Amino acid sequence: MIKMTSRRVDGVTILDIGGRITLGEGSTQLRDSIRQLLAAGEKRILVNLGEVSYIDSSGLGELVSAFTAVRAEGGELKLLNLTRKVHDLLQITKLYTVFDVHDDETSAIASFAAA
Image 1 (cartoon, one colour):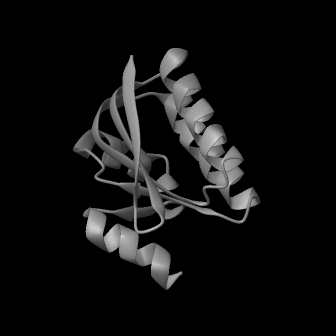
Image 2: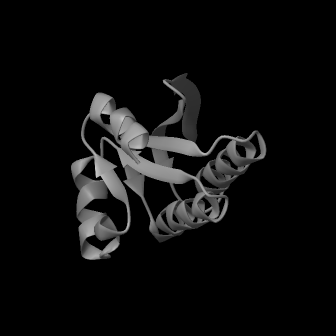
C-alpha cells in the first residue's frame, strides 16, 4: 500500500509518495495519479520518492511509463529525493540517465522554470 498526496508549488505539481511501489495496487495507484494530473492539464510533475521504501520492476516500469506519458503531452516529469535503494536500482537499470533527478525540492522546482 502506498500513500500519495499532491501539492502545488510555483506551478509545479509535487506528488509525494510513501511506501512500496510494487506490482498491483502500488503501481496502479501511481499510474492513475499521473493520468489524473495530465487530464487536469498538469504538465510539470515532480515525483517525490523520499518515503518510498521499495520499488519493484513493475513500479519501475510504471515510472518509465509515467515519464513517457507526460513527455507525450509536452510536459516534464522529474524525480526528487531518491532513497539509496531506489537510486541504486536506477543506476543498475541505467534509468538514472533517463530521469532528471534532484536531491532538494527548491532546486528541482527551479529546474522547471529554467526548462
